[in-house]
Length: 264
Image 1: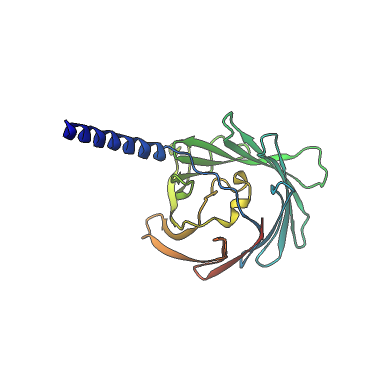
Image 2: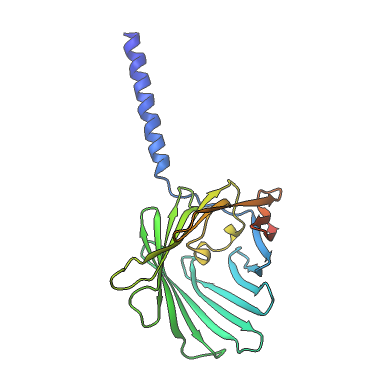
């Protein structure tokens, strides 16, 4: 009798363990409140600074390219759900007139980003912005498909498929071009496959919809790049961290980036 009870107990424990494992597999990516706010990014290709409001929401980005021949200023406004509603981006370049861009963020009933709509005008206070292009996002399980549709076109000019792990990291991004009526899904162009550390991404303090669909929680430490029929190439990414586990320096293929923060 005792043997039967022990067997029954072990069976119940096994079922409980399997049940807990399945529940864990179905959990949504954990939302992490950052303990550091990214304030500055400096690399050979860009120099950006970030400003936040009293609620630690990103409200302004100022940036230049690596040669300092062009710069931009973006200001963000939010809707009642705390998601980005609109981004006003002013781009300036040497010897040219600034361009004024309104990027409108649209969401579905579940609060998922469905479109980034890019409009532009050459006047500082225009009455009408001209719609130039849109990024459309479609969801299917753990993948997101991004389609770039230019003004006047019904078919996208390019398509990208992003695959995510349970933590919300992009494990692979695959890009397609040469889309037409006979090839609606396009032709494979290139792909990136990523391996991650377990540390916090420096951009975790930025609004996730601002950096979507590349809004990974952790930091890539290896990327495998495949272009058309070429053999895959692997690049290691070396990171240095501060005391809070946030990257302060990143080196990839000889390009060095540095990060500065405000500790909360």
